[in-house]
Length: 59
Image 1 (tube, one colour):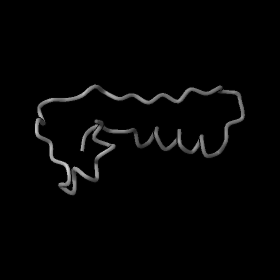
Image 2 (tube, rainbow, N blue to C red; image 1 turned 90 degrees about the vertical axis):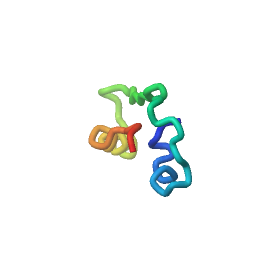
Image 3 (tube, rainbow, N blue to C red; image 1 turned 60 degrees about the vertical axis):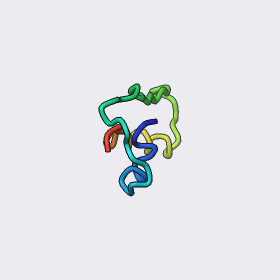
């Protein structure tokens, strides 16, 4: 499970890593859209946010 999904639980100690030397598969996120098409502001805001704050699998 990607760490960003359970980040709060890891930080609080509710979930504990039992095999920290093992790493899972990297999770990628792609935003596919038409460059010239009108884009809702919320979608543009999400894309801009993810460019600055990419998802991270490390805690």
